[in-house]
Image 1: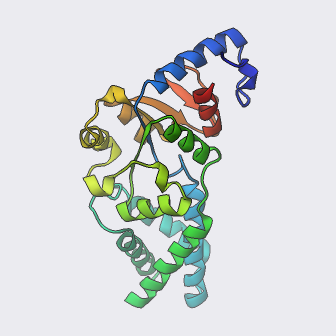
Image 2: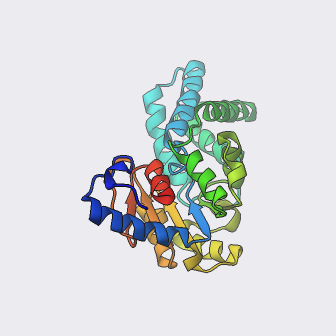
Image 3: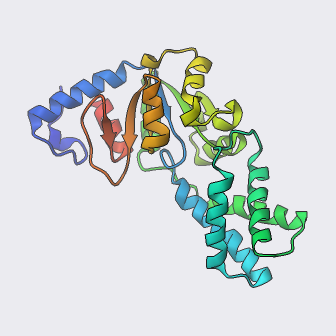
Length: 260
């Protein structure tokens, strides 16, 4: 028996209409054997953690070389967009990527450095990143419910394989994940065939999985292009109760619908 619409953690729709839509969505989702997730900014606060880690590096450079932190931040933003444009699909380790970015930053500001300097900056970045890691509200409870319901969980994400494994462990959610699929390991970005490779790797059809991600361009549209049912997750937008264009603004609401 469905609860009244007003009980769905703030979902406010006309009760009959909302309950009908929620029930339709719930049945469609629970028919799936696999639940796929993006990782960064879907299951955890990646932007917040990476900003904190980058700031730690800028402060260290500034203390040593008297460089302007805001100038370093601006330059690094440009370098980051250039260095990550291939979504880490060339198979390097997270440590290598970070040192490449820090090396480019120091060269851009004519700052002398050694390999030891890069080692220290990479270590400081990683330590700060770990201390700033934070799961999204409702993520652990949602993953726990899925596993208790017998569902398989796959992470399909862009990023270095070693860093994403490390992130899952540090967040304390690795035990809920059956498979990790990264652009780094498979050599493809999400917009260049990663979802198709994921289906082949899992040996499943598109209708067996639903995928949850925070980016329309990198998550939702390419997953849909493979025939995968999707859930767009954006904390700043409104909920859309449409099974073909389902959108939520919190993982708690998604769990509420699944357990209703």
